[in-house]
Image (cartoon, rainbow, N blue to C red; front, top):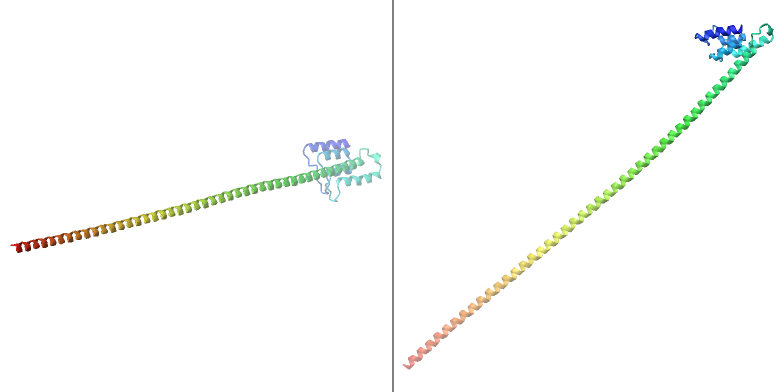
Length: 241
């Protein structure tokens, strides 16, 4: 009976039997139960994970086998086998296939949602990376601008320092030239004064010599006059005698 078949399959499943094992014709237990119209066994095998999409050597699935068996049963005396429920098997396998399609559609939708989410997150990561790169580039440009300004300020300070050094050197040179010119003027003035003093000294010496010569001439003239006077006196005394 159907209950007996169900108990047998329950025991096999509980002991780890492979529900998708195929015989030499490619038939699985699910195909056999679907062909035989054992609805309870079909349901139990589906719950145990039987592959409803597996195909026999003839290329038929359990649902196709159940439908073919239902056609055959429709021409036979169904009342002679009340435990056979081909329509139930077809319905169960159809509902299972629909559930599988829904699950696959849901899985694909979930995969698509994950893919969309992944692309969105990738875009967000790329946008965040681009924003970080823009910030880094902006910081680099700001640092370069600050460094350029610092270099320009340093260059300007160096030029100003150089200008001041040149101006100080020129001022010192001019002061030295002025001091040298003043020293030259003082030396020339000293030389001129010394020359004038020497000239005056020479003039004084010449005047003294002239005065001495005049005095000597006057003395000699006086001596000569005195001698003439003595001689005149002597002649007069001689005449008087």
